[in-house]
Image (cartoon, rainbow, N blue to C red; front, side, top):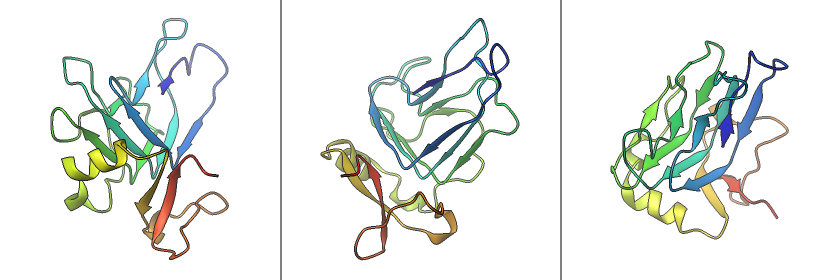
Amino acid sequence: MKLGGLFAGAFGKSHIYHNLITVGRNGIAASRFQEDNTFYTHAQNNIVITQKDANMVGLNVYDPQQFGQTRYVNNYFFNTKKGEPKMEGTITVPYAYPSEVNTKNAENWADSAGQVMFPANDTYYIPNFTLKNAQQDAYINGVVN
């Protein structure tokens, strides 16, 4: 997911909620627009799994400008080649279940068919947006039918 150009064009905030992002290269990443790679986002309850690991490749978050109002809240970040999260940016609120940040969970989510269950934590429920499963113990991330 490429973002950028905050100060080059119309000032705006992106909202990234409850996505399943599985990519080879970079997850949420800065991209230049009119020589500006600054972005303003609120990313919450996402699963971002990257597969490659090189200098600037395989980053779950690549946010070199680190705009002060950007927020990353309760996201699961993991790089499968490195065996841990790989980030360049400031995480506002880390993932609520750090013991689940491991290769097994990342591979299970990466191999899913577009929809996964993300452990629910009511602290991070987003009113009018978050969907829970029938048991009310997980958020539905990814493609919602």
